[in-house]
Image (cartoon, rainbow, N blue to C red; front, top):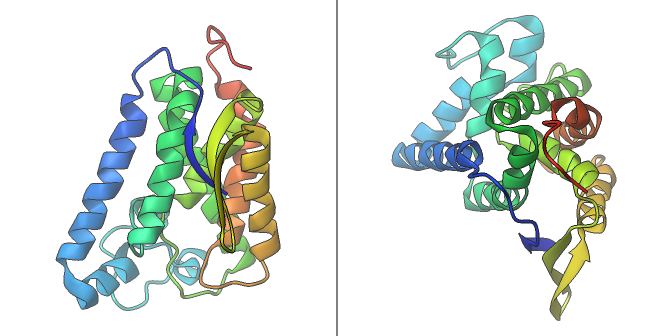
Length: 221
């Protein structure tokens, strides 16, 4: 399932959500400008490496910022075009409505809290890993968790792909995002260089924290 659009208009302009998309894209463009080797070095310096964080010990190349802060810098870095396109697609579709429900300042706080908790779960599961964790996936997973609670019945225009079968249909958000979450659970044992636990942690954080962050003056369903 690939979501394409939701039937869920907003009452306010989602400038924070759009700003996050722009920043992520600008950082990715900067990464590309470094060339292959330079991009690799940049990821090692600014990505969240579990071993460095759990041991508070820097490994080569030396990190440009305090080691704990790489949890935040890593949220704006991506490993390739598919990585950033997929993340930004989900943020574009679902982020604006969550921002609308929470308000701008609460939304940005919620985003970083979910991203941080997502990273912490990944680090706890892989405390000695020296593989850098990068991407906005954990924070965006929190947005998805919030959306499924706030707007479970909203219909999502979705591309269904099964071998040679293609079809675009509208499906309630609870099924689209529920299917996404189940995939993360099923893939957790495969590894495949993906921080599945960060996705799971971010989603659960979003589900558990969304209601306290919602602006009581907003209506949702």
